[in-house]
Length: 388
Ligand SMILES: *Cc1c(COP(=O)(O)O)cnc(C)c1O
Image 1 (cartoon, helix red, strand yellow):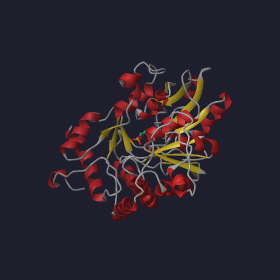
Image 2 (cartoon, protein in one colour):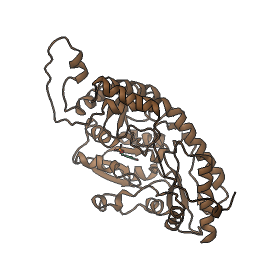
Image 3 (spheres, helix red, strand yellow):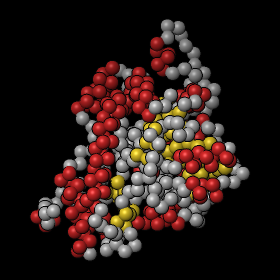
Image 4 (cartoon, helix red, strand yellow):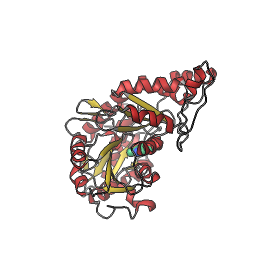
């Protein structure tokens, strides 16, 4: 390793989406075709996505947040129902439960996986519990077998916040099916695959699909594609209160190309993560990401943890790296620290969540990151602790 003082200060972001010429051409073609809202490209993207994860159906929407919102409605969750979810997650996880008037019950995580602790899930069940919203945090699958077993025992529905888990695998099957009734994905630029903004719901239940397709489009009884291709005048009806949560064909055009790139994205992320694991292994004060048996991580984020005896504080390390042009982020947030959820059920007993949100940070990782850039990050982590 060269000494850091000889290396000029660089600018390394924590994350960066990757788009190429193909995305530019695809979006231009869609624009010129005249189909700019939800149309044939959305249908094509859905088909490709369903085939990729092995689901029978995929429904594209405007974000993972709107995907989760529709999922809650389609599963019939509402006021008086308790839905179990982790506090260590992006706030949209709990917001989706709140949107339908249901009650989020915040449950602690398992220390190593940063995902729901099945034991604590079972302890949180009451006669009002209706569903478990499992999150595959930063791309590592949650303990779906244990969670499903608990759900079956208590007659609960399971659904998945798979925002970060496009391409993740659980027991040799992709996240997306058949691990629960519904899985919701995100295509935000911070995630593995991006359409700018966008989301997808996968399921094997035909009745859910029909409802979701209607709800995303004002609950209209016929889609624009059907109306445009019909030789007869079609009159639609609106049988319930719906939403405009459509994905556009401009976004889907990008998504189709990104889906082609996905195996390459995952390979590169996993290679860079393995390289971080090797390079950081010598630091006894840092815990590296766990890889539980049967789980394949997407490394949507590469999150490390500072042990209590670390020679620097978490925030001190983040500042030292920023001084060298390296952006990091604090680890996953704790939902119960935010105003709407401070008094949420379960908020008073989340010791592992408290510790994780205090002790973790996310290191830079993106498709186009070079090994040289990664070496620079590692050298500066080592250097920051030497000077501390
Ligand atoms: C990013 C994220 C979301 C929200 O996704 P959007 O597509 O931005 O709405 C929800 N849950 C988790 C766990 C996330 O990481």
